Length: 295
Image (cartoon, rainbow, N blue to C red; front, side, top):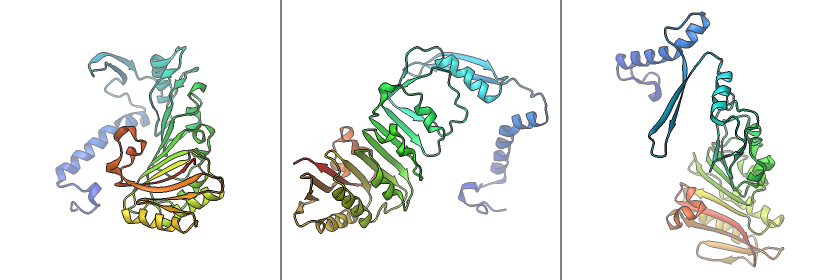
């Protein structure tokens, strides 16, 4: 066997490295071995809770005997952490866990936040939103990490959010169709795994939909793009949509039938104003903007 026989991810430079990995996985699987064979392990299981202060200093540690199944143990631990609280737990951002299967929370648990972040590999999303206090809505922002097709954006709590961010996604032939149907006024799309996220005519279809359906003032979609030439091609296509199109150096503005202005433009990421500009979440060099303005 050679180091490259199984590809780069599983390649090892020596037999000793391979043996080390085998021992590592064997240790990790030992608890299952004891359980399967109904054997008493040579050690005691504990769940350890460590509380840290603001400066990362350790304030206290508690250990709980791990004599229950995982679901019961998580419920007991969460009761220690948040059980009996009368007020909602205040947090700046609520990150929905990738796997919600074993997140057992006590009855009456409530969350107060205006920002949520969701991985598309997480489940039980609706049940977690149900923990949120009614005063949280409408949410200030919802972030999707890792796109795949889902109806999550159709949930009222998500569709009413002031800002929707799609972050870290792969090429998807139906993503633009989904974006067109999104009710949120503010949208930011960034970190595609492909060099070309959407083709010029896909952006054009979004602009045409806005023109035909009288998108309201304040609608503002931003797309991180890797290629400057792509942004230029989009503007070139938009110019031919209307005779009254007004062309700027990096923008095209069209007066709509509803007497509003639909503006398509692009800007260099380096020209943004730091954290105060919400487009700074984009990792690409250029940002294409489509927005509706009042006259």
